[in-house]
Length: 232
Image (cartoon, rainbow, N blue to C red; front, top):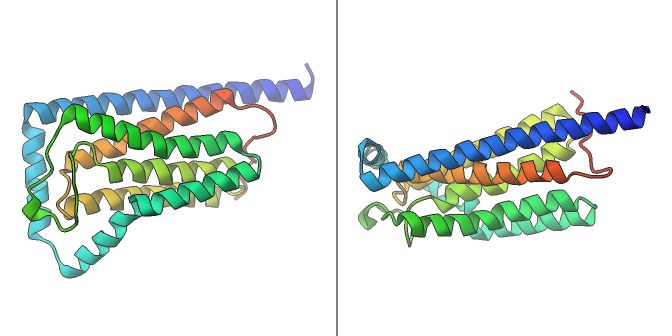
């Protein structure tokens, strides 16, 4: 077997294992969302914890935290996410990374569809309007902002992971995406427009969809579009 054929075999097996792991993450995330949704419907202990957490945050609001939360929450709003995704997808297509561009586009677009579907399915009301510090309409479960924070910024981190040439860049991208997602989710609860379990379910939805897309992408990977070996 030639060196080229050996490398192709190793790469194919690596892609397969990444895909298997990614699909595993997606299945676990889906299962956790179903469990949380069941708890919400049954109004069990999880719902009581939701009320306790949101009451604690409301009781400890400060003017400067409110300003920060209002800024942070916009990072997953449509006016920010849409331009970020459009510019990223256009840049990736222009440079020949169509497979990666498709993952980025489907991650955010698919999240919008799945969030809308799940909201309709669970039909959970938001916290009382009197507690809202920002305008929020519609149903609560799951948090669309939380889901989109993972779908958008998680996808961007994956782009850096795929194309980045240093481990530092990859670690910073993943860490930055995680910080943004956590901050956005916390801001939704602090601002009084979502229950904590809405936020957790939003994160899980974003993680599950992105993992499924990444897994599919690795199965379909072909040609020279391979990840460069990272350097320190």
